[in-house]
Length: 336
Image 1 (cartoon, rainbow, N blue to C red):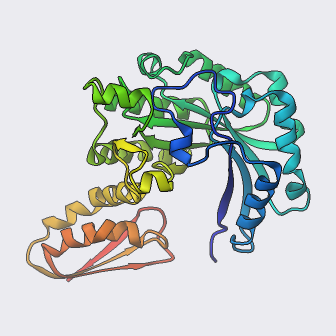
Image 2 (image 1 turned 90 degrees about the horizontal axis):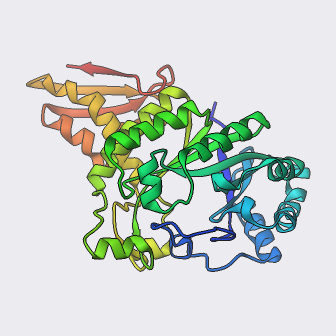
């Protein structure tokens, strides 16, 4: 039986109601969205995406890119009202919004509840005080904790987004942020490596030599450990790496940093590399056939065949196949 696929139709409302711009942020250059879409454009976005999604999938609408709960209440209500017909007709099953933790209070939560919002994602970015300060977030860790508790207590699903490689961040601080996200009860998360985007304060810091982004290799190594922390705790990882907008793909808006169109694939490749590396201790053997769970074959083989090529140094023939009886990242190696 094929698993039910999940899709989120994103509606970007760039930088609406953000009280300040964090050092890393320029939503227009990140998402290629210059201004808030009109009512008609929102309907077009949703209907066009619905036509491309396979029948039987679970679908939600997500308002991303700005500070949704910082928008005037009437405007929030208007945007949420626009998408109610899709919910009422069963075309979508849920609504989620992305916002800042310092714009969560009971009146805002009651409004979201009235319009059947299911998930609230907070841009936590880091749960280290120094990193928040150097990044210009404008609030402290306690604000994230309080907002998270309110969201869960009011019956919403909580998402907490994090970034790695921010000013002041370290490997250990990123691990502590992930562990705190788990402790706060998040049901989902996103992991974004920090990029130096054009026309941001971070670009100025970078060009002045006061900020050095992670390399792709470093970002992958950090993210690999974060993934394992979240998976063990049952926190769903919605996204690994920034969405590849045209501005990023063409290098127009990207100044520096660990951007890779297949960032998630690189991370999962390294997780499997760690699992399969002990097999290289087998010397002078002829063939290895590795059975993995359905859906894990590509990651096990590795990005551009990295893990397969590693094994080929010790085995003349290397094969991978899926086995419906195997789950997770378990595997069985038949060596001859």
